[in-house]
Image 1 (cartoon, rainbow, N blue to C red):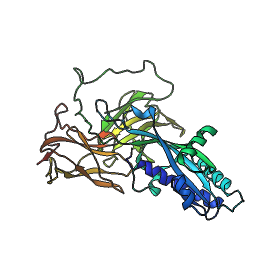
Image 2 (image 1 turned 90 degrees about the horizontal axis):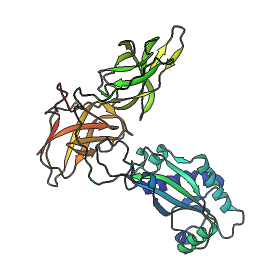
Image 3 (image 1 turned 60 degrees about the horizontal axis):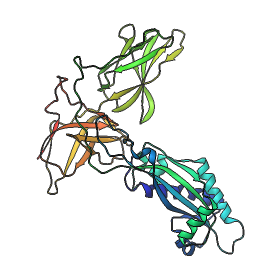
Image 4 (image 1 turned 180 degrees about the vertical axis):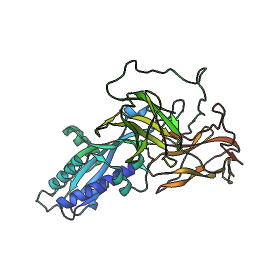
Length: 396
């Protein structure tokens, strides 16, 4: 997700992407961002002008919950935008060497080879915005404007027609700043505290991983992976972080019955969502791998609890929270103070110390959860059906 500066971030990234292409095609050419009427007078040499002439609401995303929203939480949908750009070529009046055609061709070729704006380009060209953290890619596609539509557009711009091509950038998701609620979790469902369980009635010819328990694990704890055919060969568990990627983490597994294996998570395993598979190695060295299941690893708060915070004269407070495993740039981090989510302040490198600015705070004692990539730190202590009184923040 991103902030209100995301529109400008797309424009600046397009300028940077196209600048390299047009300079290669026409040495000395520039990429400008002006109104076409102003560009006529301001541009003297060969140039490609990038102009945002229309924004639309993306209907498919309009009523979709933002990524990371848990069941029962109320978050305003993101402002989903499709941006419509006009790329116009400018050449000196006395130049008859088809400079305009070369500029437009270079721009279309560059966007044909790069139909998305990668996070690295967004971060490099628009450091003022956090659009690069948006999970949904910003895709670029040509827009087919009829001759009548193009004529109407240039007439409304009050400028003479220039060789142009239209493109659409979709989708840009701008976070809502409206307050939202994150209710406390349910501690037990039903008499035994478990919902319905489905299991296969016949053994599968290939190893099958049905479930990973617990649903949310803590670093250093044991996990149970159940299914069928999981003990035919030497078993190991392979974990891959769904956000950070990187080399997989391989854990030795031990049998835990006819259809299950268990493994122990490392103490420094990062928080967030992991993809877990069971790898079975036969005596001849051949491997069989199950389909992945999601393993959610909870962050662990290591700051002395309860936290204390003092409101400043403006009613705001800065909370500093330390966690056991490092949190990396690109992960979505929030501190849930009662039912109120507070986003983490930006950080440029992996860190175990996070800062959160709570605005318009109200004195009181509130349950405290650290959320990393949608996974919350535990609120319960030894008694799974009661909230830990010390896992809280006291605001004065």
